[in-house]
Image 1 (cartoon, rainbow, N blue to C red):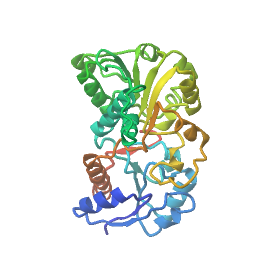
Image 2 (image 1 turned 180 degrees about the vertical axis):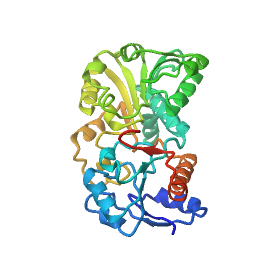
Image 3 (image 1 turned 90 degrees about the vertical axis):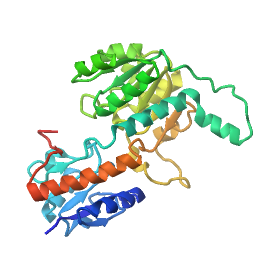
Image 4 (image 1 turned 135 degrees about the vertical axis):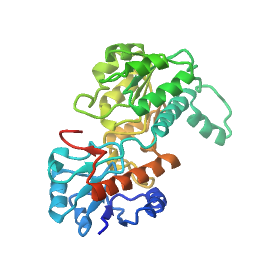
Length: 335
């Protein structure tokens, strides 16, 4: 019998891409708009697989209930897995992910945030719509010749390095596991974080969220950066201490910030709150800064990436049930 899949936190784009790819697999999929929580986990009854999104809750309590009702596989349709209690899942339910869907999608979005903040095209757009053709206050800088600090040189980090090298920027990089041969081939060097912070005009984050990287951008690190530095985060929200970033923006230590992720994004991102009040004081404060650009975790949002996510997710399920293989497994010991 083929596995049946409970699809949580379904978005319109999921319904656009997954059914088409699923024609090759023929799985029974129930699409639930509900986020996975201790209250909604019961929707997984009579299924063998759950397919959660980035803001679903896979706590020890939820995993214990999934195990009790007979879920055999947690198939994440994302690369990140910091929302999963891997220790609780260990030995009960294997967890697989989509490790790389379209690195260039995220890298290109990071570059778009940089260019928009630098040349202030978002502000210019609204001025022109009000018939205001003045350009005062919209001055940017040449990217050419500036220094970009790239933290994390996995597939996304390497993609942004190639883009920024195309602008003629100098690259300084940091990675816990540096790829020296790649660096030599692409004309950049690895440095300690302190050096990267001191030398970079733009810092872009592409590393995973771990205990070592949580809040790596904080008051202490901001104090070592160039005054007016631009910070871009398309990685994980908790890489940045949001309160310290606010203070850095207020003092002028941070010149601008482009955020596609936010530490408490699960309460807001992907939803329409246009007729409601934002009660998250930090997020509301970010929205008051003219030099802060926030997008709603859309770095992955390209046709190519969504196709790859659907293909890899369904292939992960097939490999597990047909061959007992877990090529994209994450776990407390291996993740």
